[in-house]
Length: 118
Image (tube, rainbow, N blue to C red; front, side):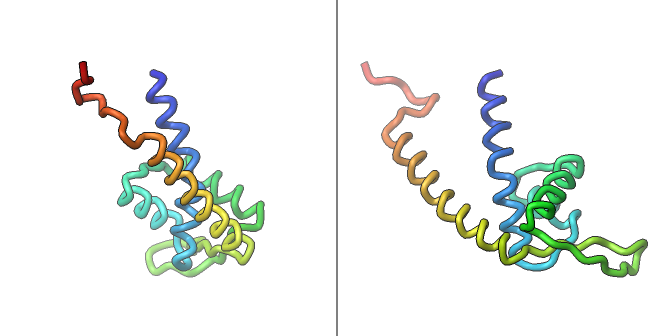
């Protein structure tokens, strides 16, 4: 139970970073963001993504525009703002620091399936 809760918190913690990274590649529709996250094995449902997109937009990190669709109603496409790019670059640096900290902390540790020396 403790491991599962920690795993959930770790995934939540990096979701905003991953979403900003995906949107920074270019204008994108929400279902395409979900597809990218699934490809990265960071599964997310619409009920999680839409509140996050709204929060990022309200904080000035994203904007959106409506585009006509050939297969239904107009679609909302998201773009990263200049402020969003600034935040993303700061998160890039934080990510590098965290990767180093984790790799350094776990270096030399026995894996759960390895036998302990006697």
